[in-house]
Image (cartoon, rainbow, N blue to C red; front, side, top):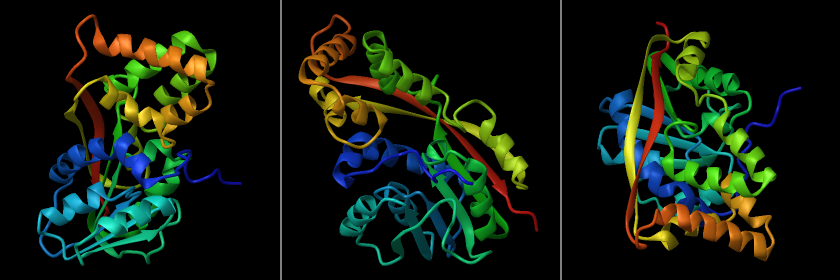
Length: 270
């Protein structure tokens, strides 16, 4: 029996945008630069969310067609509402059962998806299957343990207050494909060649603590889902503790945090 295709529970495209959209939009161009892109290519975005990578691909002016799939109906609806580019098609689709024939795409990309797939080798096999011989398959996942400062600040603080949050922290830092070398090993095991790995670094700015905290009041993403389980008193206690970590003894206001993602690319033999 196979496991579910994702551990990420989705509710709202708007909540996802608040939680992850700003990060994806900043990271997407870096993945494209690393993966490469050719004029007139047919490109697949696997696990497109609300469309950050697909829109960044279109902004280059190079692809002739971009197909973007995601399991979440709310995310696809959000992406379709905002899409004004006829080259992009957003569709419901499973990364572990990609709804396209074999050898359909010149380039297959996935941004911030594989660490939420319990059996990522299934998704990697599908990405290779739909890529043409010689095509590039590339992906990026967060360095969850060592490279995501804003998320770690929340999880470290919450884990000090609540054993349940400690379990969330452990799951977050041990997801598949988030350790050094894991993506490259998975690409080689999946039969891809000319495999290359790198780290992609961005920074994320917040206007103030309210801007930082707002995504945790939604329903999308494991931290927000955890906060939603808390009663009023422990939720406020957590908020104040995280606020103290954000302030670091200085007045409330702008903060900038580094974030690192692992990235890999490889080529389908032939």
